[in-house]
Picture 1 (cartoon, one colour):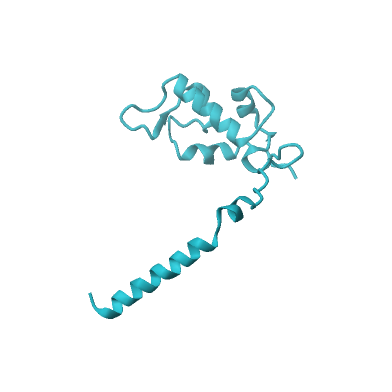
Picture 2 (cartoon, rainbow, N blue to C red):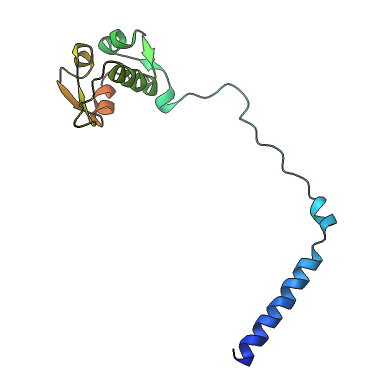
Length: 128
């Protein structure tokens, strides 16, 4: 190693040692701990896909409720799909619709799982 590099590392050790000695353990314990984070006060907000909105008669018949959130509707659709084993065994991304799903999915026999959101969007009545 050259003399210049040796001098550099020697000086670095001196600087690090000085920095370590300046922070005493007593100074570290005097720091006040940050207050614990709490959830926002008040009722939980519901908006976007978690906001319950009125649904179409077809989706109302499927879900059994007059209004539902988008997330809730998709969850119930997937429960129905899993319960009745409606996923195509060779292509899991494809849903084979039974009569109950056909009423919601515009009478289609097969639906891709990415189409579910698009097909459900027509069933949510927009409120102003």
